[in-house]
Amino acid sequence: MPSAPPTPADRRRLLLAWIALAGAVLGPGLPRWGSAFLGSRHTDAWGTQWFYWYAGEVAAGRAGLGHTDLLYHPWGKDLYLHTGGNVLDAFLALPFRALLGPEAGFDLFVALVLLANGLAARRLARLAGAGPLAAGLAGLLFAFDPYALSEITQGRPTQALLVFPTLFVAELLGAPRWRGWGAPLRAGLFLALSGLTYWFYGIFAALAGLVLGLAALVVAPAGRRGAVLGRLLLAAAVAAAVALPFALPMLLAGARGEVPGLLDVSGWSLHGWTPRTVEDFPIAIRALDPLTGMAGNHFLDGGALRWVDEVRVVLVLTAALAALGLTRLEPRLRWTLLAALVPVVLVAGGPVLAPEIGWVDPFYLGLARVFTPFRRLWWPVRAVALLAALLVPAVAAGIGWLAGRGGLRRWVVTALVVGLAGAELRRWELLPLETTAVRPPGWARCLAASGGRGAVVGLPLGPHPERLYAQTVHGHPMLSGMIDDNRVLLRPEVEALERDNPLLRWLDAATRLDGVLAADLAGEDGAERAAEGRARLVELGYRYVVIDREALRRSAPNPELARRLARTARVRAREALGPPVYHGDDAWVYLLDRAPWACADGAGAPR
Image 1 (cartoon, rainbow, N blue to C red):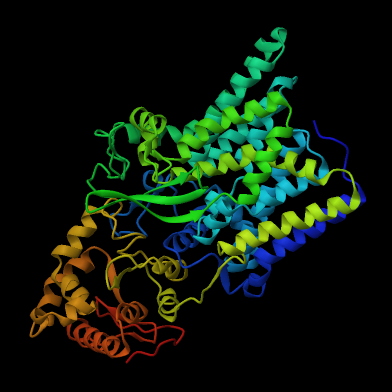
Image 2: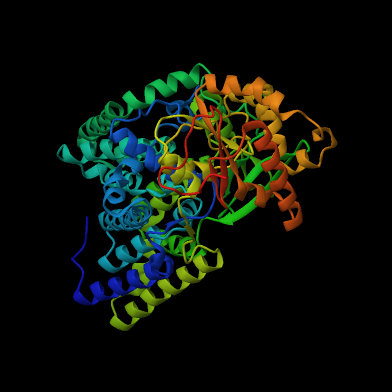
């Protein structure tokens, strides 16, 4: 149960600590709110911006959550089966985006997510018996945990939203003392919301909750075990009632093999395994090395497994405080937490624990064989979210023991926690949080002013996820999606169209450096190819061809080749499609149907 309320001095210490660390992480980016979003130019960052915009389209009744033809037009994409339908955070962010705009609203929402994570961890620590200062500093460390900050930096605030699994753990730790029905109802709801935020968080939390529930039965007085069991079953029933209507269709589809990207575990054993999907596509599996607190990728390199791209996801400071705090916790709580950590660590470690040693993880391999969702778990390292939550009581206990009761000592401990955490985050380039400046491209504004719903072919073909952000401006369906170089996620019909349509093949070759340098491009009849492929594209609903000049510049190693590539692309496109209706530094836009049209707002005058 929570101890006494904080003293005024402790409130001042906590306020200054939060201002200092939050200011260091978020402060440098504040002047750019409104013109940039928190995160890098990672593929997932563009996808997140698209999903947050799409949630608004769904809320407005212009789109549905199950299927959309805005991507991979006209065949579309099944958002539910391909992405898990985890858009709870996108809907929570809608009011902020509506009030402040897409960038500033997003940034404020992300900042509030971090604050909410910290407050949830503070509540967990208080319920575990920590004092106000220790609980507040443990919450601060949890709020700016390197795992959560890494997810935000790479554009995944969905995975940084740790409020619900943390509150679930907080409720479960009190299960031996449950008397009424409020706590089990809250626990079940928090577990369901964990899954609706990110399905694997629901699974990770359920694994930890199973251990916590068994521990609650063991420590409960003999006469109360039946009541505790009944309330635990009620929590499970509430979680199932809320989550299953959304999860069951996906579980059934996974069992039927209809979910793309399922890992091929048929040959996995204690003697060997390969990170490859049932479509025979090699995939990197990102996991935790528990011995070092580092995350890295297992992937196949010439048939051999390698471990690369290591980055820290557990601070040395957090681990040290947790180790100290475990020795200070009441024995029953200590062993309960350690027991709950076991399945979480085994899952986070993926198929191999301690990659430098090569210990195969039979627990993970067994789960992957018998539980279909684990065959789609490319990122087992995300179980670190539950590991961090389970360590909060121990971290708080360690801080509480160090801080003691003296005023000066408490100031010193507060300063050390903030300073050491900041230094580690700085070392791992998570302080300050990166921001990405965005400006709607002129060609996207041009298409937005065009009216109609004609679809867009973006050239060069392939993975250019920044076009997802452009779609949030122009709103037209596109041929492309998000990760178009991943055969697992790319529609086969799109592959066939790109391969078989002569106009697309010819224009794509003209926008690629290897195609321009190839001798077989010389002398090809663009008009004839346009006649062969144009009608098919128009029949499928396409109206616009956009040649992305930024992509052309990025693909060339020097300015001379960039100019040659742009010149060839412009000449070939004019030969096949006529003059552009938009000519800007960012792109050229051409019409497939040759209908008279130019940008209504005058941007990019036709040439």
